[in-house]
Image 1 (tube, rainbow, N blue to C red):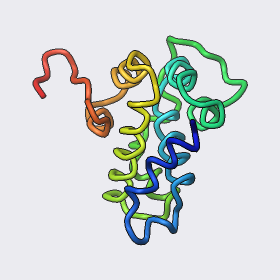
Image 2: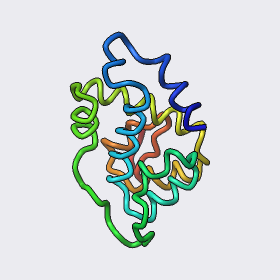
Image 3: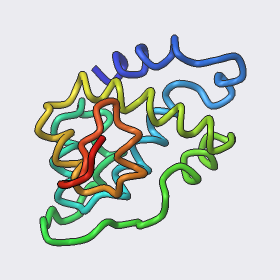
Image 4: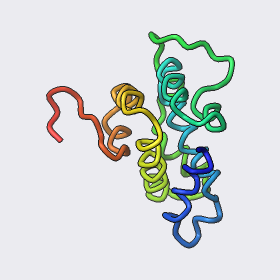
Length: 137
C-alpha cells in the first residue's frame, strides 16, 4: 500500500517536482507531520499506515505515551520545503497531496485524532479539516 500512496501522489506532481520525487515527498510530509504530533498520536496514526511508511511517522523504539506534547513545535511547511528543496507554497501543495491520500488509506478515527492535536494552520492542510470547538469553518 505504501507504493499505492506514492503512486497516487505521482500523477499530481508538476514539472520540476520530480527533482524531489514522489517517495521523498511522501516521506518528508510524514516525517514533518509525525514530529508535530505527540508520540502516542503519531503511533496511532502510524498503526493505520502500511508498514513501510510507519517509521516516517513514529520513530522506532519511542515510547507511546499519550500525555506528552509534540516532539517538534515548528511549522511543518518549512521543514517539508527544506527536505524537498522547494519553497513553502510547493511544500503546502505537497502536504495537501499526501494528506489527501492518507485520508483514503488511514482509518478516519486516526486522521481525526491526529488533527485535533494540531494547530489550526496545520489542520487546514488536511482534505477535511476538523475545526476547533466554537470555530466556524
